[in-house]
Amino acid sequence: MYATGLLVVCFLQLLDGSEGLIADCNVDNILCTNPSPPKLDVYYSGQQIACNTLLHIGDVTSVPRIEFKQGREGESYVLVFADPDAPYPCASSDGSNYLHYAAVVKQTNGVLKPSQELVHYRGPHPPRGTHRYQFYVFRWTSNQRPVLHNSDRSRGHFQLNRFKTDNHLNEPVAVFQVKVPHT
Image (tube, rainbow, N blue to C red; front, side, top):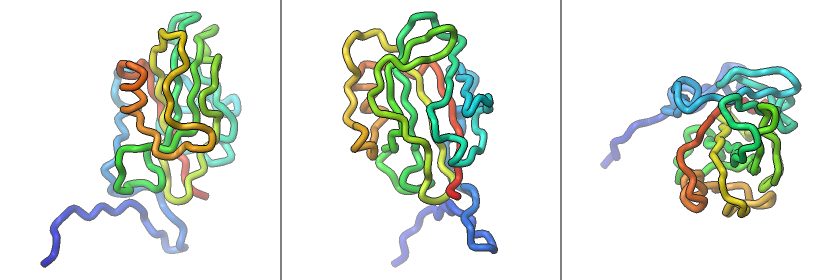
């Protein structure tokens, strides 16, 4: 007996044998098209990029400059940068992400600057396919260190919803997404 189901094709195998972009995946790209919450202004290597921009691994090796013009001067936030496509796009997943960066940041002259790094920045480096990398900014009113079950040595299986629940966070006040292909 054959099981029925939906076959999702996630990669295009190009004639030259290289992997193509995500194709026919039911992936969530509304972070960049939903008018609320407000978006961030993200700069890699001094260049502002648009939400959903396709970047190369070499472009994302350093922490980007992040501006949040709707934020309040001196206010604290928690910034999370995660890959929902780990280990590869369209993988059956438990909803976990690979955590690339987490910090308590403070709004200073329109720029989010880290005041407490929770997990140091590790630039995107997808093992195959094209991955989405998502920034989430949450209001942070506590003087305590956020509860985080991940570390520099344990970045996999980051649960964004658990992080929100453990830290009594509301929905993000700002989001952003970039895409990076394996090269």
